[in-house]
Length: 213
View 1 (cartoon, one colour):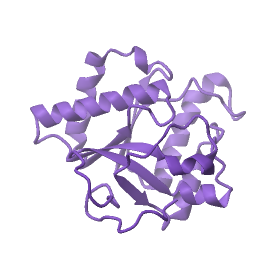
View 2 (tube, helix red, strand yellow):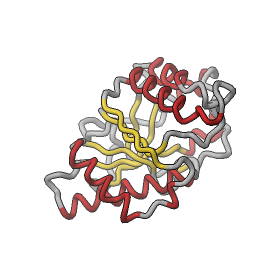
View 3 (cartoon, one colour):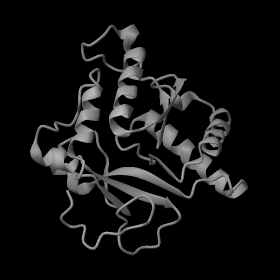
View 4 (tube, helix red, strand yellow):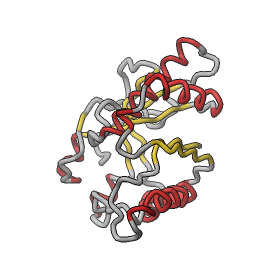
């Protein structure tokens, strides 16, 4: 499992844990700690300007992303969709680039391309649970991954990010349970309807997803 991050988060708020000019180093260390908690062994961090991805030229970044995918050879690529989940310009920009790079590889070098592409989303059923106006809620999901068997992995990973004040209060039981279940839209192969997927590999499906938070 690997993670590619485009910025060091140096333009954010410090949450009182460091000086502003130290934030990039602090956030990088926090990310490494969270990856360790989640078992992510390959973490790549590119030092693009936090908050400034929309100013990066596409012809510069797309070949670099394609090269990364070719070298890492992941079976599945997961990124942001066109709404960035929260509408964050950086999320929207990188999600668009990764999606375009993925499809270019499928067209031009299918042997080096990944097999599946997903966009992470927040479902409408979360609106009253999270009570967050910054989230963009949608219901076109195709895939739901239930991680409730690992209840503390996400909480412990969130705890690593001390410089980031959490927008979601996971001390509330309903919020905590919902945070353990992730919703995705499968973008490739194209979704043709049917039972919702229960993993990112197409190996299992949900018989009934109505009770999932």
